[in-house]
Image (cartoon, rainbow, N blue to C red; front, side, top):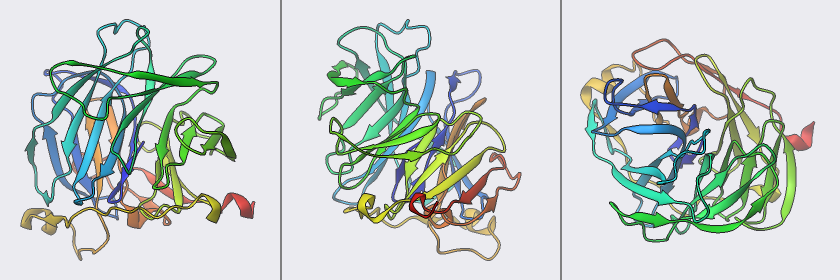
Length: 307
């Protein structure tokens, strides 16, 4: 799971093929209703495992769909990331994505985490193994249609199912029982936070205001937990996205309307990436069975310091 200031993201894994349809982004309002479905034209994936987001200094929001899963260790030719500009108008349709091929320097690896640095936009992958993994950095300037060689940055003796970087560069990584906070992408451990007990806890994001973590699981009806952070771990995002508007049809699908930011869901077939709007981070939402979006809960939890 990842987020831009306009969205939270939690992702389940799965393949995408032409027969099953392309990956699709779903814009979802703060009450959980789907506002728009936007497919990524011509995209296919082997095993999509994660999503990341960033806003550049001009306020442009980018979403990164990470096809990085490799349970069999067979992807010696590398893994891929699809870069999609976050749409500014909400309406059903198609978007094109820029595809980047990433190659490990030391052979194939399974991974479930992509981290996007909020200040530089640089991408990082964290591999996943039975006893831990490693952190790899992508080139600062990615080139399409060529192999972009990843750089090994160091071992990580933890099983990591997702992660995120906050505006100050603190790294939050999630396992099945704990969320660990590091000073930076290769820095020292600062704090450990208990992770909510979930059937398959494999998603994590930082809220739009930097004050909470969002922890999720996989599948229909799964819960997403809001975890307030202590002040020492709070960072305010420096960049904010540009305005997002709704097409008339999208506005009509939401009686009463709302000024709260929208959220994004991305998925295809069995693949489901659920993004929950920033305005819903501290409230309980029961997602209605409407259009493409499955039901889900967003549950606010007390601060870890209050427990």
